[in-house]
Length: 137
View 1: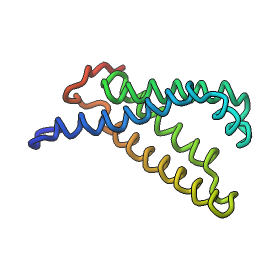
View 2: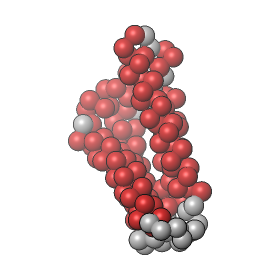
View 3: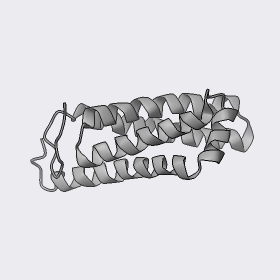
């Protein structure tokens, strides 16, 4: 699957960029718990603090899963699901106005294209990944 020249390095770089950013975002859930819980409450999430902690843990697990190639189907699948659900629930630009609508649309679209990337990693999760631990189910 990764026979083309440089494909192995490009795939590793894609994993590090994608997984690293999502893991960093998850860390921010813990570092900015109060403000993120306030936003989650504003958006109507039940148990906002718990929701922020759980989503932060999911982002960290999923990000490192994709980077390291450890349970990549679970990590990538969880990231895809989280990103799609949070796009709709947290970034409902259709209910906002003015600059808020634009900001929410930008966040919505980032989550949707991130979900697309997660689905691509999920699609190749059963292949042997270069420079990965390749620990699956």
